[in-house]
Amino acid sequence: MLPEIRDCERVDALRLRTPSYMLASGVVLLLISLVYYSSSSALFALFLLVGVSGILEALTNFLLLLGSMTAERRWQHSSTGVAFWPLWSGTSGKYISCLVMTMSALVPGAIVISTRFTDTGSLKVLLYSIIFGAIAATMWADLPFNRPRRPAIEIDSEGIYFWRYGSHPTYIAWDVSPAVVGCKSVKGTPRALIESGNGPSYVSISSLPIGYDQLRKVLFFYGARPERRHELASQRGLERVRELMYASLNEVEAGLARERTQSTNRPDPSPPPFRQRSSRPPASRSAAEPPSSAGNGGDATSVE
Image (tube, rainbow, N blue to C red):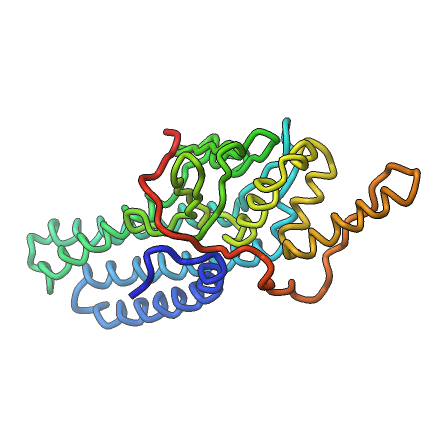
């Protein structure tokens, strides 16, 4: 049985395997649909559409996974700080996958009704339609419906906005010490669990090319360092956030120590350049870094 709250690193590891599982499931469902090609048009349509939806979801998740490996490219300047922009191909893939899954519930049911329940396995088709309709509803609920050409995450010196232009915007101020502690399922959909002084908030990031641990590092860094938040309005803040996408917190701390040493030893106030992204995979989090899991909270706080 899965724990109620899963830590960030565990969820990110699960996201690595999810596309393969979904792709395999989609292919199997397509093969099953061929069995009913000549015997039941309703069952053929049902398994065909569900299989196509599974394959589309797998490909979309794969694109988002690739995007998370270069997540620093999605961070850009905003009017007051830095903003994270969605991957249009990932967002489009999510909507198309949800639409096809919805069709898998509606089309077979329409076939059964139009044939006056004479099609093979009519009652079975209706049962499957209800099940896949519920799955489609869950998939739609996971989408934030953000306005096109608008950022998904915005961070400034005052706080952080999630999906400001979407159907479920969430704002959390730095003053309440927000921290990403893991992932929790809310009404069947995965949500990033952010604990703060105002209670827990649940934010959907499954359609974004960013990992749970990457988001955790950004919130932890600026949540614990009020004196650094002003830099979010400058190029320096953008570079820092981008560095947190691939560097560990300990590496960023080491860079800060070097900055302080160099600024003390030389009269030139200009800061040293940021450490460039290395070609090797990012180092795993050391024991000195804070854990990415925590206990349960209360009810979610979300700005509707």
